[in-house]
Amino acid sequence: MNLFEQLGIGPKTVQAISELGFEAPTPIQEQAIPELLKGNRDFVGLAQTGTGKTAAFGLPMLELIDLGLRQPQALVLCPTRELCLQITNDLVNFSKYLGQVSVVAVYGGASIINQMRDLKRGAHIIVATPGRMLDIINRNVINFDNVRISVLDEADEMLNMGFQEDINAILSHTPDTKNTWLFSATMPNEVRRISQNYMTDPFELTVGNRNEGNSNIEHEYYIAKARDKYAAFKRLVDFNPEIFGIVFCRTKIETQEIAEALIRDGYNADALHGDLSQQQRDKVMKRYRDRSLQLLIATDVAARGIDVNDVTHVINYSLPDDVESYTHRSGRTARAGKTGVSMAIINSKEMGKIRQIERIIKKKFTKCDIPSGFDVCEKQLFALIHKVHNVQVNEQIDQYLERINAEFADVSKEDIIKRFASLEFNRFLDYYKNAPDLNARADERESRERGDRNTMRSGGKFTRLFVNLGSLDDFTRGDMLRYVCDNAHVSGSKIGRIDVKGVYSFFEVESEIVDKVFEGFKQKDFNGRQVRIEISQDGDRKREERRSGFGGGRSFSGNREGGERRGGFNGNRERGGDRDRNDRGDRGGRGGYGGNRERKPSNSGSDDKRGRW
Ligand code: AMP
Image 1 (cartoon, helix red, strand yellow):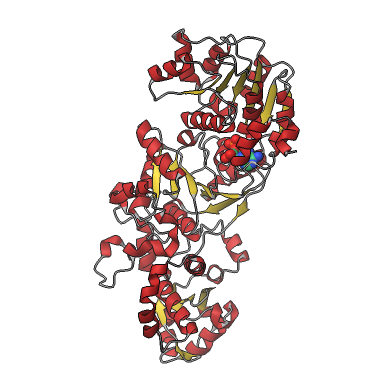
Image 2 (cartoon, rainbow, N blue to C red):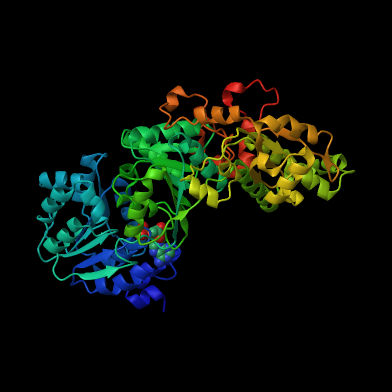
């Protein structure tokens, strides 16, 4: 017997959900379904979105409905139109083989006349947002006498959105004999009060601990100065080539600005907030659901009820004012048993908020470093390599193979790989070699603990130099220190911070000995390769900081050059003006390197306005 049948679900429904890929019940389904099927008890389920709670109440609800009676028997109230449509859709799918189950969605922003017409035709189940439901009730066109079940889904969200009075009014039109099933991700006092007012001895179920976040979510925070925040954010995106994320901002303006800046910088992003028309919001959501959008930039309110599977990252561009909202934000990832990451970019004064959130979610954040430009290059390079390895070969390429092979006749496989990787890697290296460290160091003590040599020095102005040798040439920091001292004939006290990367490194020297260092490395070679030293220009850093926009008092609109331009590594065949191309389902942005053809560094060097690409 199927596991759902063992819980009491009928074979027709089991067939429908099997087709949806439901093989085994989720924990909340396992515990709630047998209880709810009894049809004689109120119920409180503390569960995050993504736990399978819609089926937890939807499946028993369908079993309890009398299909012969075409009257509203179940009323589901939920906070947003998005969620309303989602639940309706799920119930329709679950009941595919049950015969004529009529489920009607009632929500604002669409024709009330059409909805009333659908209701008049007869509905077994109504799924509604409270405002529109009350409008319809007030028009005296609905009879709730046969309602046996009322569901309050995402009750905490409904209360947050100010629906308390509407809910009271709606429920007062339903029979006292009905059962109420309440679902909520958190249990603030207001929700507790609802359960006390409307329920008798409810069966309580907590999936995970109360208010606690989903255990499949890793929580990370990154500390950046306000002026570096946008650049830091883009580094995080670049460091995750396969990101499919939701980025939360605090205000509509910030949401719009970040989205516009990202689009300008070649990312596949769009905004979702309350100043957009319903039609615009639907369009954005459709693109996101279809995966033709890679980054959805949203306010808390607009993102309520978003139920998209496979969101890999939630990024808190700004932490929410109300720390409880963090649980809702992070709950948009790691749905249906998957894993996910919730990142917060904060300034050092916001540590208190992180600790507060940790207490709520009962989980520790990991403090992570904002990846360096080099880290990003490396990550992107290997994403490309991986992609090449797994690419589906198009047969049409066969016709060119002879010519291609002839071209490479004198080159070994190793050499081809080297050249191919260099082609891409050099480009990123060029872009990122002077990229600044964007981590805001908490204090000098922490810095000292990290062994940053420069902060251990007093006075002495340092100049940062680039050298084309790194860990792949077996250099450690100590080796590099010795190597520089030996060749430049200077003492170690003249050397500051050393950052050894893969194929190159940076080191700081007291400015007065820069010439001596250049002299020391003149004509120097290492394993047959000429050693190249360059000044890593401080001016570049300042320019990048200026471009970073946010926090520095500049608005994006006044900052056409955007922030730290990574040139849209995550791809994006589309550019700002071509946004609608995404509607054709071009996944552009997920493509890593390959999706970035239009933004290759210009060899002419004349495209200064667009940054380096
Ligand atoms: P929910 O928490 O109801 O929004 O569900 C989150 C996602 O999990 C939805 O996409 C469901 O289709 C999916 N889901 C729910 N229950 C199961 C199950 N037993 N097996 C597989 N997927 C499920």
